[in-house]
Length: 137
Image 1 (spheres, one colour):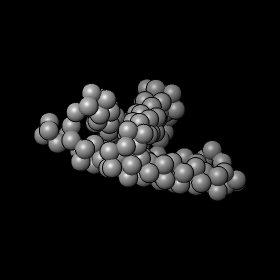
Image 2: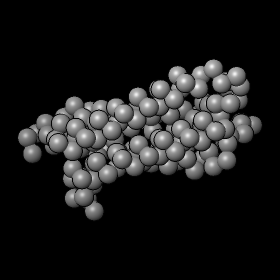
Image 3: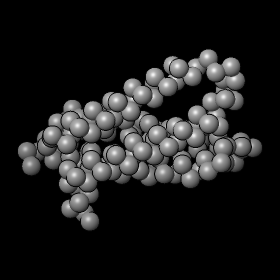
């Protein structure tokens, strides 16, 4: 298992899972949270374009990393760190803390924990690939 986690295939797979959990959480946000924040729907098109751009950059990072690109792994590491890990922690501590009277959408905590766990695994795998390529291995 350790050898798969530290392999190129493992890093690509874990980053793909992180992308999918980010998109899943994005769909849930889009369904439950954005209508509360923007009832008129004025942000629908810019919001969709932002999600499309982030997913496109992530897919570019996956394709570049599969060819061994260091820049691709840097992109994957940053995307998983910001869009999975930081967003999950911000939701837990700032946006909707469980100790407050915040009422999140259905399954908010399942998606939040999936984002955190998949993001941490993807960050660790990408960081290992970067460290391995730096040392020439």
